[in-house]
Image 1 (cartoon, rainbow, N blue to C red):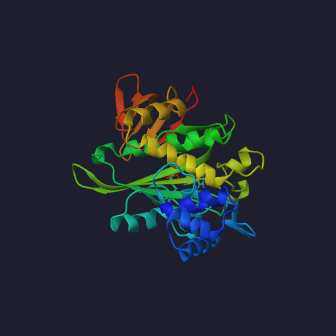
Image 2: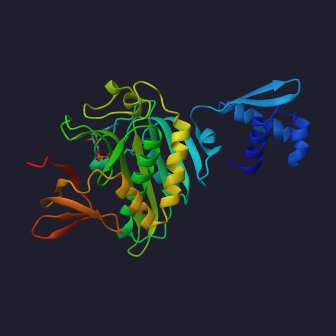
Image 3: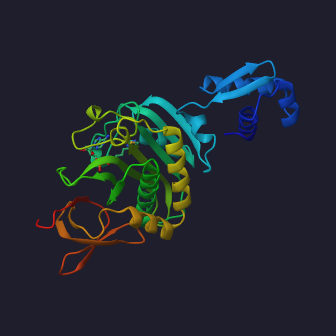
Amino acid sequence: MNDTRRAILDALAAGPVAGPALADRLGVSRAAVWKHVESLREAGFAIESTDEGYVLDAIPEFGGLAVEYGCEAPFEVEYHDSIPSTNDRARELAADGATDVVVLADEQTGGRGRLDRAWSSPSGGVWLSVVCRPALAPSRVSLLTIAAGAAACGAVREAGVDARIKWPNDLLVLDPDAERGGRKLAGILTEMEGEAERVSWVISGLGLNANVAGDALPADATSLLVERGGDPVDRRVLVQRVLERFDDLRDDPDAARAAWREHAATLGRRVRVTLPSETIVGEAVDVTDTGALVVDTGAERRIVHAGDCEHLRPAE
Ligand code: BT5
């Protein structure tokens, strides 16, 4: 958000303040103040005109400017009420040279999971993709999946829901009665383009079932709305917290790993990891500094960079 607009919002939040006084204070024209106020109103900010001037009554529940306002992380947010896939839009922006941009949507009509699986994305969710250009070798890009997972998990836990991370990319609410030991609350799709030495861009796509009813989701999925007993979460604040945490972790592999370990459900568990060519069964013992999973099979320690991981019951 540009500095003038942020300063106007700050002044209106502390208002009422008259347009001419605000223009003088900020060193811009009265027409410029008026234009900013109008576009903020169009974006859903409730700005009242009183006898003493403008006053900010309410910030919209969701939207690009709403998320940018009050967010401590340096991301620009492009918001869509509905879009096929935020990752697809993020790829277009990345191809045009963008960085530190977030594409955010209320609904996706063509959401994608890994391996071209479909991702249900009804209205009320948090569907977002962050474009960034980290100084990372392609072999270390999984670190961003780790950072995004830890960031999302931290923010969800702050919203009062006891989620855990299943390597590499799922947030689960654990439930021993559920078929897979938990219900899926969120998933991450990381995509990248780069050369041998260095990535050109990375997109971290997060799908988080926020204010979505259970019957709008696949059978083994859950949402924040369901887990909070029907109490909707403030998506604006939730997204801000995710982005701030992600920003803190994305350039700090040690912190990302530590946060991931803190929230992981996978470590210490017996797991089955399905790779294209083989299946590995053993105890998950750690995550490496490239975001790979270390599995102790009893005979050896295997490092797994990508694959589908299932948590097994002790007897399996
Ligand atoms: C993932 O894939 O978990 C990554 C999902 C990433 C989605 C985000 S939304 C924003 C951005 N834009 C996109 O187009 N995508 C990203 P995977 O591990 O392959 O899991 C996919 C599987 O999860 C599906 O086959 C279903 O079984 C299940 N699933 C589908 N929709 C779900 C949902 N909303 N909640 C929980 N599980 C779901």
